[in-house]
Amino acid sequence: MDRPLGVCLVGCGRIAGAHLAALAALPDRLRLVAAVDALPDAAARVAQAHGAVATTDLALALGLPEVDVVLICSPNDAHFDHAMAAIRAGKHVLVEKPLAPTGAQARALAQAAEAAGVVLAAGHTYRHGPAFHYLLDHWGDFGKLMAVEVTSCVRWNGPQAPWWATRAPEEGLILSLFAPHSLDFVQLCMGEDDPIRVHAEAARWQTGWQGEDQAMILLAYPGRRMASVHISYNQPSIIDRKVLHFSKGVVEIEDGEFLRFNRELLVEPPAGVVRDGRVMGGRDLGHYFRIQLEEFVEAAHGRPHRCVTGGQAARTIDLIDRILADARAHAADAIDPPPPPELALDIEQAVLVDAFQNRL
Ligand SMILES: NC(=O)c1ccc[n+]([C@@H]2O[C@H](COP(=O)([O-])OP(=O)(O)OC[C@H]3O[C@@H](n4cnc5c(N)ncnc54)[C@H](O)[C@@H]3O)[C@@H](O)[C@H]2O)c1
Image 1 (cartoon, rainbow, N blue to C red):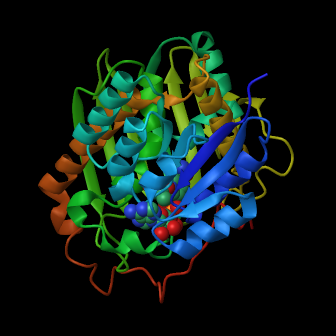
Image 2: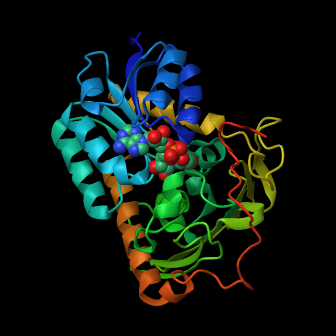
């Protein structure tokens, strides 16, 4: 029996709560040893609840011999420095998506992890649900894949963390923060191939941030396969739908949980997991984070696992770089000027809806 791995959590904000709940559900495998945050109070709150050390100093936490693995839940801009420090300290690392702000940085992390002999995994959380596992485990039953459509539209009334508001349009908002989930799914379906052509349109409808909050992406893959992705932060009636066109029929995955093949329901979640897929917080997301941590533990012990590892995740970041460049090349005029009053959505102030901790 393995002893529980000692965890250092870096970034004790919104999404950290989902990881901590998952960690608490796996006491025989993981225990929190250190909580790091730039804000001492945030680190102290988490550390106190778990009997861990609180610090603002990542190097100090990485120096603790009890730390085996590092969970990085800091803002996107900090991922590269935090992950590189953890890798150099010889720790296994799970980095929230996106693995790094640019493809070049993501690849540098992947190479560093390989050289150090540690696991580098990216938090593409929604891969870890039963419907996706079923899809992969039965892939051969559906015939040849021809096309994938992903629609993932939610409503955030303004920035959900302060740093969302200050991201420059060139860094991407929804393309950086939300697209990684949809693109990871597309890349998962396309195996080892990256797109041969990328087309992207993007626009901004809200005034509370500077980046694009809506995008449509069209991708052409080798072997005549293609994919489309529509993402939005502006849709009050949530859509989370994936449609896969195979030579033997259509696989549809609704709300990440209901899988149908040619309209026949093959996978559905236990009662209560999807209470109302149309509203923020209407789904329980906890099992995704728990399964992701279980897989990460398997990886850290050198056993087979389903984590998205550095090289794979870096390919997705490379793809995001290409999409951002295409959107900036011809759609900047729909993003950079604030939406005119007749287009701006009716949002008085940022309303914080925490879909992860506050399961409505
Ligand atoms: N997998 C998912 O579904 C999912 C969902 C939400 C967010 N995320 C990702 O999680 C990450 C964090 O997002 P969030 O919404 O929790 O943000 P957040 O702002 O709520 O939390 C970030 C925390 O990091 C701390 N921090 C900032 N700079 C730091 C530094 N240099 N060193 C240490 N701590 C620092 C902040 O004080 C804050 O407590 C982002 O990369 C985001 O993309 C993933």
